[in-house]
Image (cartoon, rainbow, N blue to C red; front, side, top):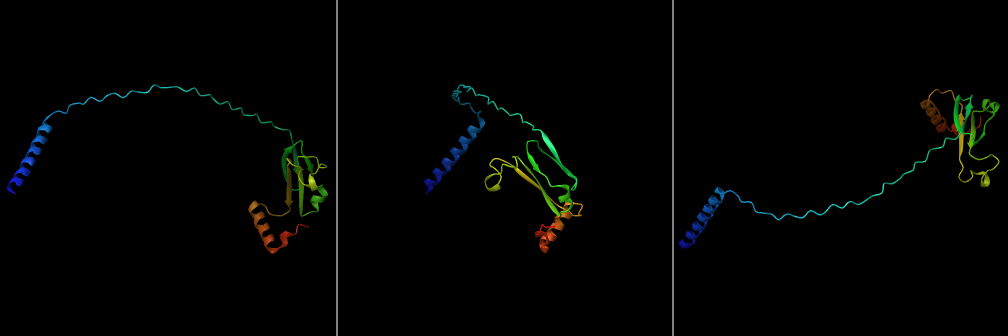
Length: 152
């Protein structure tokens, strides 16, 4: 057992001495082999050509509704089915129709022909002076059941 203690003490002392000797020396550089740099290969890329079509501005006409007090532009090639001033004056609600096809060329069953457009501008007469008031009035009428009847 005494020999084992002696051996442990001897090994410990040698380790301490080795550490002291290594601490006093300057580190030496170890040469590292250079890694070859792969050659740069340029891959030609094509620059995409994007052609942006110039928008065509079609001639327009202006529809004016003097009863309601507004005007809107629409394509000159479109047809309009206006409401007569007398019908507007005598109605609570009326609609003006704008469409991209001649009125006599209705689609199947009188529907909108394929690829065509129809816009109905519907006006409801009221004494309100703001959008918020118009919405509130319409909600009130819808809640009472009176707003479901469009007949004047």
